[in-house]
Image 1 (tube, rainbow, N blue to C red):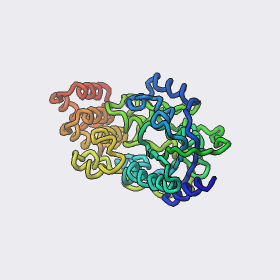
Image 2 (image 1 turned 135 degrees about the horizontal axis):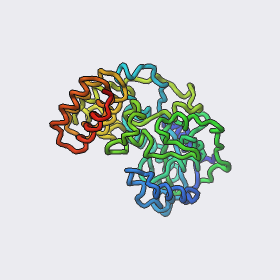
Image 3 (image 1 turned 120 degrees about the horizontal axis):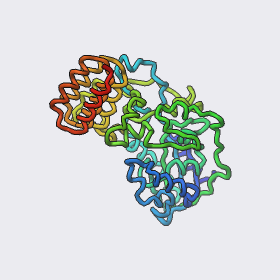
Image 4 (image 1 turned 90 degrees about the vertical axis):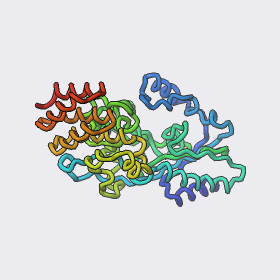
Length: 373
C-alpha cells in the first residue's frame, strides 16, 4: 500500500472493518453478458430494482463521470454455531445471523463515512460516494476486484481468514488506486457441501444461484404466496438462511464466536401474536422490518406446519380464524393440512364456510383434500 491507502486502511480497521482493498474503477465488462442473461431469464424475481438501468451497476461512471477508484470494505458479524435446541419441540424459527441487532445499513453507513472522512482529510479535493448494500452497486464484484476474497460456490465472497460472515461496503472516489496485481485465488477446490446441503437446490454448478429457489429470497424479497413445493423445504427459516455458510469449511469453528441466542431462534407462537404495533416495536429498527409483518407471519406459519408438533395446531387455527392478512391465513391453512389432527380438520372445516378470500379458499380446499387425515 502507498501512504494514502495505509491511512485509509488504518481508519477502516479502527472502525472495526476486517478487510480493506483498493481497485481502479472500470466498466465490469466481464460480468456484462452474465448479468444481462440473468435478468432476461427472470432470475431477479420480484427484485425489480435490479433491472432498472442495469448499465449503472456495470459501470460506476454512469453514476458519476469523475469516479476513478474504489475502496472495498468487509465488516464481520457474529457467526453463531448451529443451535443445539430441538426447534420442533420448542416451536422456534430461525433468523439469519446477519439480521441480529440494529439494521446493519444504519450501523455501517456511519462507520463507512468515518473512513470516507479520513480519505477526504488526506486529499481535500477528494469526492466520495458511500454504499452499504444500497444503490446500483455490484458489491461482490468490487470486493473481488479489490482482492478481499473469491466467489465461492455458494456465490458469497469468501476470505481464507475471515470466512464469509461479513457485510460489504464501498467508497467510490475520484482518486485512482492501482489495486493488487494478482486476483485472489479460488480455494473452493472440489468441495460441494453448499450445493449438496441447500434444501431447495438453489445452488448449481458453475457458481450459480437461482434466487427464486433461495430461502433467503423466498422469506424476504418474495412478497406473495410461497410456491407450494418449496414450503416443506424451508424448514424453520423465517428470515433469510445461513445453511450455505454454516456448511462451508472456511467458516470453521474459529469464525463462530457465539452460541445462537433467542433473538435468532424466536418462539413462533410469539411471532404469530404480533400486531402491527408490536411488530414495529420489536423489529422496526432491525433488518427484519424488510419482510414486513405479513411476510414474517407467513414464514412463521410455514415453520409451524413443518414442525410436525401438534402444539402448533391451536396456534394455526387461531390464526386462520382471526388474522386480518389473507396471505397469512392462506399459509396457516396449508400448515394445518400437514397435521393428522382432528383439531386441524375442524379449524379448516370452519374456515371453509366463512372465508371470503379466494386465495385462502383454495389453500383450505387443498389442505382438506390432501391433508394427512
